[in-house]
Amino acid sequence: MAAIALPLLAGFSNLQAQGPTAEPRRPKLVMLIAIDQFRYDYLPRFRAEYTGGLARLLDRGATFVSAYLEHYPTATAVGHSTMMSGATPALSGIVGNEWYDRATGKAVTSVSDESVQLLGAAGTGSSPRRLLVSTIGDELKRSGSVNSRVIGLSLKDRAAILPSGHMANAAYWFDHATGNFVSSTFYFPRLPFWVEAFNSRHEAAKFAGKVWLPAGAGRTERRIPSEPGAKLNNALYASPLGNDLLVSFAEQAIEAEQLGMRGTTDLLTVSFSSNDAVGHDFGPDSPEVHAVALGVDRSIGRLFAFLDRKVGLDNILIILTADHAVSPSPEVLEAQKMPGGRVQGDFYAPIQQALEQRYGPGKWLESTAGGAPYLNYRLIAEKKLDLDEVTRTASLAMVSAPHVARVYPRQQLITARGPADIVDARVMRSFCAGRSGDLAVVLEPYWLRGGKSGTTHGTPYNYDSHIPLIFMGHGIRPGRYYSSAALNDLAPTVAAMLDVEIPSGSVGRVLNEIIDPARLAAQP
Image (cartoon, rainbow, N blue to C red; front, side, top):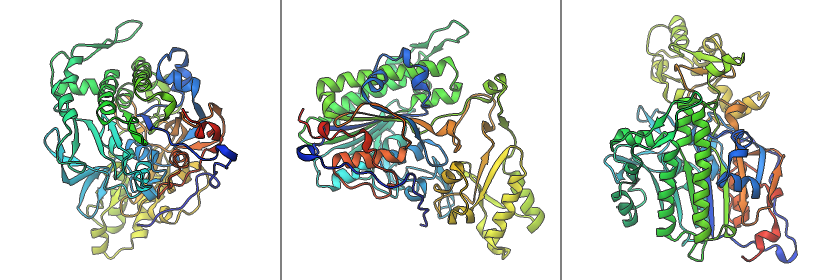
């Protein structure tokens, strides 16, 4: 597949040898914490109310205040695939949560895999096979640390699978129908005993009837349904209590797998999905998002306390980040006299109309999976038309659509011609030939496609791209850092600290300003 090579930041930085402290000592455990749809500004906005894990990270970690996603779309799968690979979508192949697969003629997700089965529930399983690059976990194992255990956990399949990589020992996620944590036969033929034991306790049902946001001061009470089943499981997922459930499972995983307790370096990725569900439903300025932000602070604090007892936090390298941020809801922006709104109707109708008018009748769009238009190549070939000419016609049609800011035809994305600013660069480095659509269409800032309430993300603008990035623990020099950073810098930085190969598609830099050679080499 063709790929675009665009450096995010100038060059790589390297940890310099400094006498007797130059030999790095690997931590007992590397733990990635991802919070789905967590804007950077939630850190300063709610700082005075944080008392748990986020407070500890801000007090004792190395915090980058100017860390951004350098890709498009800003979506869950793309963000999670970037964290531990350092790759852009052009290289990783993860161009969205889903896309249209021309070979099979159907939409696929970033982790869908019909060759494997789900374990713990009925149905087809998932795997990392669509990820085209390696991760930190893969490189750790390939470095000779064959006994290292790599495990990914989340309520979402893609958020558990993509950061942990191809060689992971396991990835586990939440099944809404059963309330179980599940995996797939990609990893093993049956679930480990400890997972089956956890599922047998029906932990999700124990949240029945619990209130997670009390009524008052203009707030509506938010409560988990009383009856166990799919309705309860869905509501739990979309509440701060879903993060509590994930921590309970993470504690069992750490204990059962003895992570960080076996004389080698293990890797654990934990992605908190409930913040994303709450954020979509209510928007970043709601009391519900305030509640879930304070809730994840408590959840992470509980996880830290458990790890401190079992492993010792000084023996752990911890990284906290997010897969994307989110736009304010258009209704809130309108009340604040800000621009923005919702584009309703058939968004891509101008393409169909323009191509019919110029080239004749036919189904000109084969799919719009993942929000991107895929032209009908068979029809174009039957009519003996030039694909680039048809794409340009489609682009001109979309440029004239209401509230469209920019349109990028495939020929421009393939050749990466003419990046004028950061928005252009983010879009162009995210085109993967064979997977991406034929056009990338970017709306004006703060405009969303469809819906009547709530909000979403996905744009290359800063409000969707500004994320937290905090390193804490083994080898880290604490403080606030104002230098520019990208999510792509996470993987090469961890690789340098572990003294393993940088993942195959990484395009970031080593954040050497946060690495303390003396702390990195010191014995606990």
